[in-house]
Image (cartoon, rainbow over the protein chains, first blue to last red):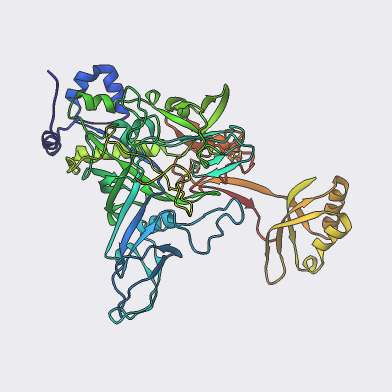
Length: 411
Length: 140
Ligand code: SF4
Ligand code: SF4
């Protein structure tokens, strides 16, 4: 008989302290030992994790009012501007935002020592942050300037809202050119000097539920060391790509938009990053529990690094100028071994996501569920999967006469 | 030849145009990397000096003749384990495997005795967990 479980049955087991929870790494060995059918019966939840740079991240903050009140037009936190084009004392601080005074790439490659991600990290760490705001003044909001010091405790609300996190798969970046490149995939040495890769592979959330069968809008997750929720699919969510027999995409595919209260998060899991020559960003820790509703779901969670492939992409011309240069696929197990072969040449690999930290996230989430402090949530709505006909668009280039130059027309 | 050295000097020496003489009389390219001179005009300079071998040696003799203490700069690389997020990005840039990933656990470790202070790892660390320290002793 095939085994079926519901969210409610699994949650009841969690409440009783009887749920069998394993990480996406542990499940591999269990399946090898017991087979899919028995493993599916015995295991209730598989926990996943990923910790790496996720530029499309940020926080909404409501500062509360000054006296007299202010309708902030521009806001800076430690010199990093937050978007204030919403209500009076609300703002959105983006992880990749730089201070107005940052020299950027004027002295190339720029250092990008501090940015929005660093501010968010400092806020969560309880540090004092300089808040500056300017305004034009209205009858209801007469104040024109604020310059003070705040901490996370002083603001009304602060919640992470990341439009695109947890990329299902990612490019393996190389450099076919003859100068060093400074990219969001780190330093790429010329003439295929190294191959840079991201994601946590077999531990990565969306690689363990490749068709998003158990996770959707409302799914409760580990976010930044605290609890968060899946808010929507992420931006650039593009599920209908080439997939292997195991359902795992062989290109960048699904993404998630996530939300959670910053005040219960932990600075260890929201870390500001500086990519030389590229910019500032933030490493975000995300872990998603996968309920083993049936054997099919269990099969997905048993995915191994050797079953995961990602496209090798040239960042000299291929990526920046969208030139199709076929360099084949890289296997995740090979990437993690430290060397891959491209065009017959052995190339050192450079990792950008933290596998040890991903493992800690999966283990932490497992602990929370075993302790009964974290129950699963059945999604209130699904996110589009492989059968959805999502087209991946780029900006239309229109001439003054109204012709589309790059074939990307609007219907 | 090219070397980084630390010059320790006292008030009497700092009155003299030392750098000017090194450039003018010994044809050296002198690049000041760090300087710390107190109000009593004692202190040190960390300089990179480049020039022909003979001239370089003569320049050093000139400094010593003035009573300046010249020491080759010892730089050390410090890996701040608590700042490191274990991303592994630095390992493939390290020529000596001083920074190395354990392929079983994927954890990175730093072995100071293997480090040749080439500086390759400094730029690629996104958390700036790896820093270069000049080893400067107290004022003489
Ligand atoms: S300075 Fe050079 S040798 Fe030392 S750890 Fe960094 S890359 Fe390795
Ligand atoms: S690049 Fe920096 S953060 Fe990443 S493993 Fe090396 S020392 Fe740690």
